[in-house]
Image 1 (cartoon, one colour):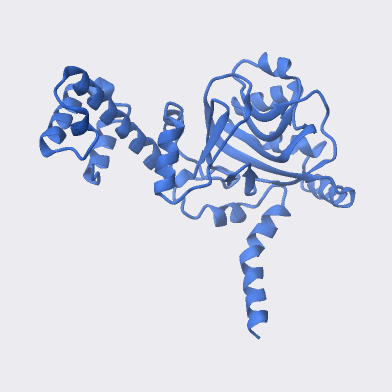
Image 2: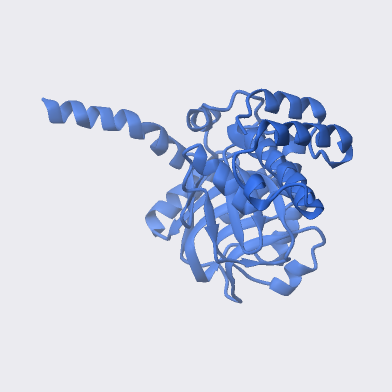
Length: 308
């Protein structure tokens, strides 16, 4: 009796995942199930719509700061590195995810039929591109395939940029590197570059949870890609990540200035600040409003709960 109960419970838990994998794209209800912590507005496809200005501010924050804040929140599997970048420039955006698997012709045939019945056009590797909105980053789990794992070339790269004005993160490869480099504003983070065509892969889900190397990614996560690595920020934590990191940056600027001035010793700056240093820092903030990366209202709200 106990085994029957556990089996039934497992079916209830796994049902939303099965539903998402069987839909091209996933339903709004399925996306909402996995992003319940988000209480703000959503895009028409159901993904969380994090604030554009906060997303842009994330671009200037280091991986170390984002990683540390996420780990403090219990999110330990959001970072992946060791990849190749088209242009050595950071890019940020909302994740539109796609899951690919090694080809099984029987299942692939059914997925193509299902997609075409639901209004998709052409080969399945173009379907996620058709769904992109401005600001999106196309994030694809291509199971790390390099040879015959090229999810895009310069034709699809142009289509992606026309839709999203952004780039891609692929746990797979891409082709036509030279052609992609010529798309002004487009960027890509991929496992590698290869001249082959995409073969023996099939699309199994759009806007579903995916694994990107060691990271777990959900549709609507905020992508920060730079220096051959990527980190994925859950949208409900974006504001906390950005403002906390910006505050830490202000503390560092203050500390570095006071150390250069000889006002404090490294031991005083690198340990718990005294009340006198805290007051000096608050006066420094008032005297240097041009250094604030956030609004004063955001800073004051953040400082209410700051424990230093």
